[in-house]
Image (cartoon, rainbow over all chains, first blue to last red; front, side, top):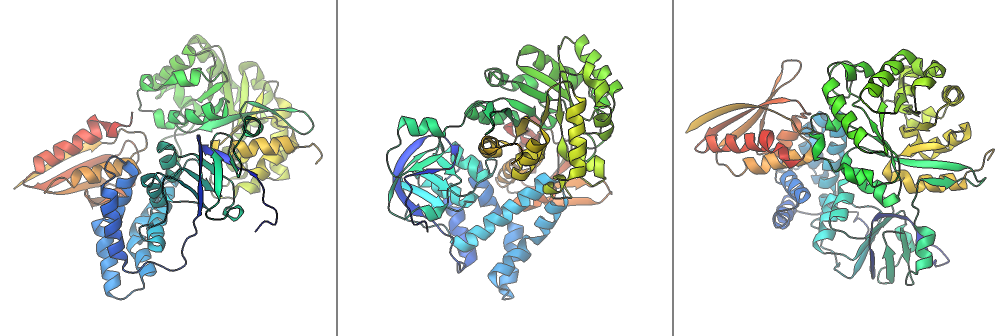
Length: 461
Length: 96
């Protein structure tokens, strides 16, 4: 408990909008619900009413799944304790999904989370309503659905990733949400004001000056020494343009792997064009573990040529769009792409620096490039021989890797940014700032924290 | 009673993730017939799952480009397969 009651608490706005209401502090019960199968049936009945909500149907199908329920029934009949029975019933699915790609592995974790949540909380019969400001450590999908059904006024959480399903449910339901504020700051029953745009919670009405002070929007920020730093966003799919609009910045990396079979004309590119900031479209990075087949830039000029041309057509249409080529290995490859892209009427091209041979020979690639962007994950894995995703990201905060990253900065005569995951980690970002990097593209969920780290940054600590 | 078998290819961006799996299971559940999805693994092993079970479908862990066989047996097998083919290949789960 804090000894001093603060009037304004600063977090991060997750869902925009403003609301006032009475606090309900939620904490997960310690025990488990009795008669679990019956609770699941009641929950399924409730969810059935939300027919138009795909997440509600997803949860309903999980908890009514014939395979899962049959396994659960057998375990309970053998008097296995409920918690263990749930684990056993879920095991075949979870093991299979965990062994698959990281995308499915994350989904498996989410499914387990959903079931565990219902096991602890039953059907979430809570005293909440349209007047409630719901306060908790974090929330899962079933609880988010409950908050939506009860139409709570606002939500304040300590943690919630912006790309989780629970966050999407809150966003779709337009419930103003602030994350990064601890439940310990509140007492149930007190009245608070929530501002999801500014990312603040207050015990007094929020005035215009409070809002101005807290809304962190923009593309350029200054370190404590007054040096300018650029912050852009990494987006997985075009629908995520929402985050760039919210933070008033551009896109340092738009991934296109998921668009490879999509009709590019059906994407709302105009929203990107209106950003008034660069939008860097990275050409399909396929092959290796990211889809089958050979990995490497040259595929863009061979079997993927038609798809690549379609992407270039999009880039050509908007003055703030740039094309970026992944997996370039040598200056010669950069030259080929520069010539090809120019012949297609696209004026500028940038290159990912993620293959060590390209980092090593970067000086000779300057004349073909308008900019470079360092993909730290791949560069680290190719540099050290460690498989992608097998080591902790903080291992990259390492003087040997630092030397390579410094070399890139010295060798380049073009703007160099970091779009790798290292820039979306607190320690990683400070490491990169200490090496002299001043341009970054980060995950939307990290943007506000990145602004804070940059503004607190002083060279030489 | 009839038995209907059809092959389809997944063309949506993310393959059989949560949303498409939900749509397949809820579509399949509308029919009386027994419906299965079959996927041949790279090692030649064959996975055969109940199309009305979300867990079953997610067990396939099928990314974009995967070929699946839909098999239905029962009084409305023809309609069931028809509906699933439309969802997967024509509407592409309404994702794009």
